[in-house]
Image 1 (cartoon, rainbow, N blue to C red):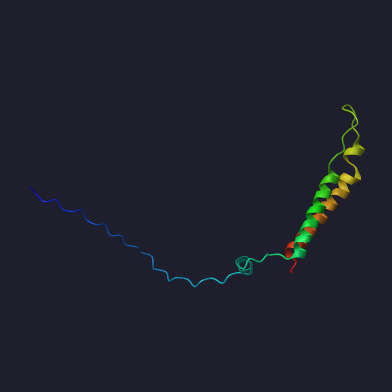
Image 2 (cartoon, one colour):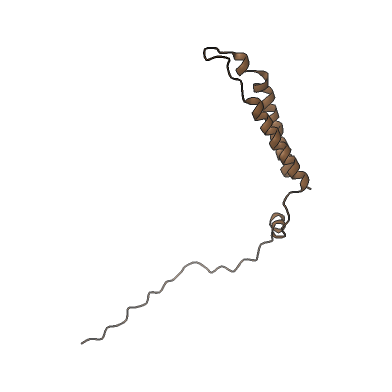
Length: 107
């Protein structure tokens, strides 16, 4: 009878240098505000965001509608009216600008 030998252990050799632990990062203002249970934006920012969303909704409502009087009638003045092609997109763009101002405004 022969004695069985335990299997040889494998040795893993790495060629990369060990990196030193990095210093902890400084927390940003947004992270600190969230950590202290404070809101990121102020009251005025949220009011402006609501106003911008309302303007966008009004613009979309202005763009909607315009049903033809009958199935065999086509009226270009209903589809391509000034309200739909000029006023509604301008109101939507105004709402988007208000949203951008609300996001970047400090306060």
